[in-house]
Amino acid sequence: MRNGRQPWDDSAKEGDAAPVDETLYVESRPAAGKLVAVLRGRRRDRRLQLIPQLSRVLRRGDIHELIATGESAEPGGTVNRICYLGFCEIDVGGLVRRGDPVQLADCLQGQILGYDATHWPNHYNIIISTDSPVDGEEAGLKLGLPVTFGDEASALCD
Image (cartoon, rainbow, N blue to C red; front, side, top):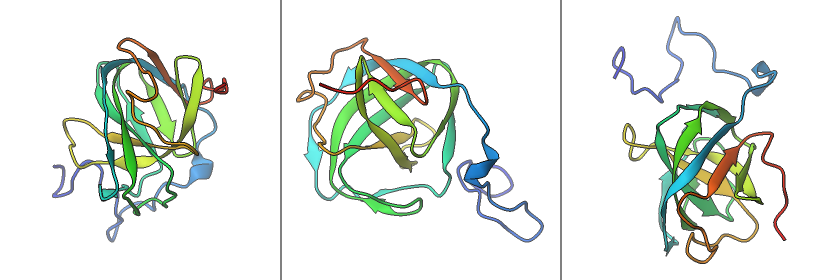
């Protein structure tokens, strides 16, 4: 906690800077990593609370959970229907934003819907919006599978 605020709390207080606008970003390096765990399971009542921020820095060596959903939600909103995909370790740090594509191996999984900080500082839940959510086992994910976040994640699934 810094100045009485959690690290993900960018809520403006008198004298603070205004919230970051999406138009601030000109370009950023995509982040990449590999799966270190494959998950199975679905929930209809998960109540993931998306943080209001549009971007996160993914640092080399950090591990984050990947969760798929077919729901739509705005920053600050709630996501209930989810499928657990897995955990990935970041090999190449970068900045990721809401709407960035997420690719597992050679297959575009969807776009970043947002981030849930339930388990922070252990890890973020990175919520991926997709038309057909499935869990990691159903998707046939395997340990060591490459994960790419950002503009370079562009190959479509068959």
